[in-house]
Image (tube, rainbow, N blue to C red; front, side, top):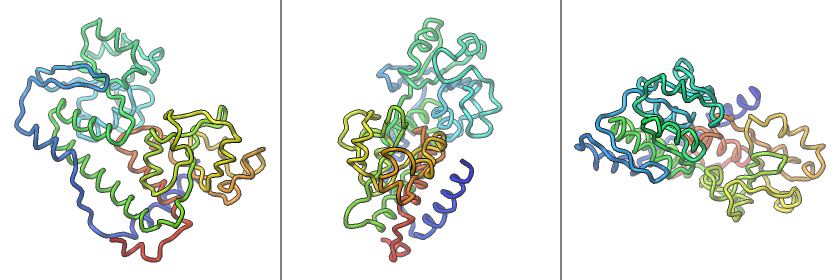
Length: 325
């Protein structure tokens, strides 16, 4: 896995460096900041489950039971207010020094530990934590659900957290920076565009065979890379398909996560029935992205997007890339 990550980093750095044009992108974060710059508490917001939450003052003791939301809090400068996290909250390094309240699943979380930290806000991943939310609400704790798993939802959640934690400016800056980097990837990918879009399959798991559909943020990433998602027309976010269906689509590139490096080892796939005939496998174009980056629709998803684009387009260099408009 370390070797795969190193290879990706060696690819992504020169790929991004080959375009030095400054990018200025209007950001929803800017509008969100301007609209709320003069607001004062009490503040009422609507969370990802459609629930209204009112805050008399900004929360200063926050428990996050979702790695993605932990990253968001630290990214907007609210890390100092985080008093509890899960054992999966591995980034940034400072998050690993915070008291842990269990794992990610509702069954693994300790209500006692959460309550013992005396939080004025618990931030969850939404329906995935429904039982815990119910228990915490009964105990009188304020909860906020942020289940977003699209680029648009991510921008909205950053703006919302900026309001709630009284860090609008930091939130707006984060959104602006993300949008600039996303636009750079889109433009660089456009410079590498071929007559026929490169076909890509993001394989979530091999057994049962599960891929990323068009409604997933992985599908969005493929599109931003200027490629065609072979599962784009499937309605489910992560549909299960047959191996025959994958073989029929015959993607030119297969992308997955380093968390599944053993399963999607390129050499092992060459001898695996059905897989060995795929053009992506024959050409050695099986890309493994950092598992933490690509599995969380948080601020570092842009890192994963840059890695994906660099890996996909590394075999299709554009002679005019350095001068892309």
